[in-house]
Image 1 (cartoon, one colour):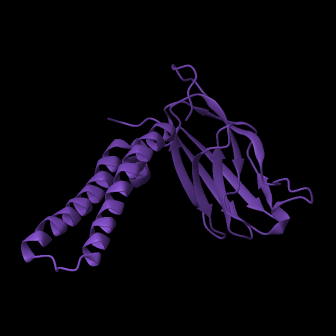
Image 2 (image 1 turned 180 degrees about the vertical axis):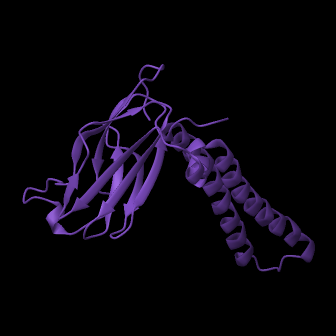
Image 3 (image 1 turned 135 degrees about the horizontal axis):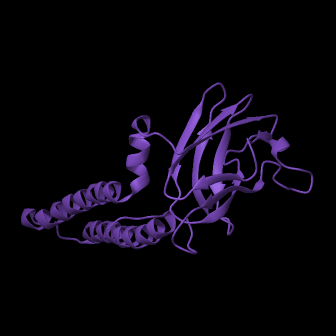
Amino acid sequence: MTFQNSVELLKFHNVAYTIYAFMIVSIIAWFGYNLTRKEKAKSIIRIPFYGYIAFLVVGGVGHHIFTYNTIPWVQEDMMKDEITPDKVFHITIANHKWQLPKTPMVVNCKKPTEFIVESGDLMYGFGLFRQNGTMVTQMQVDPGHKNKLMWTFNFPGTFNLTSTEYSGPAQYSEDGKDLLFVKNAVKVVGCDKKGGNE
């Protein structure tokens, strides 16, 4: 199983973590029940308890190893120094204003794209969002550094940009509008598959 976008991954994690959470709650309930018993548990009864704890630990760690192997952008992030991006966009931000090379920034589907973002003053966030408001990807933007995000878009779409870090009240207008919000900042083209969400 390989996840092509974060929507698929979120659905998978919702199921996996719900099951895991119920298992954790069951062990706490089991422990609590044994505390209320008047008679002490015999030593042999403790073996299933610790076996269940070991199962939860192995299951939790195994889930993350399994997820690592099925999420393509994790390996891309780990190996980004060895990947030549199809396009590179240099972006700066200062005084609560983005300086984008162009709007929209057009990227090719299924090709690695690198965003290099530099802050001239504060800590910001670089976040790309779907039209329904859900996040595709993000990174922190530390001042004084070249902050790099490598990402491959697997589906067509147009994505909005905003800061994912609170950078003070100057980020918002008096009526509460996010001044760092850029509508349709990134456009993905060249996908064979029609529709879908990144």
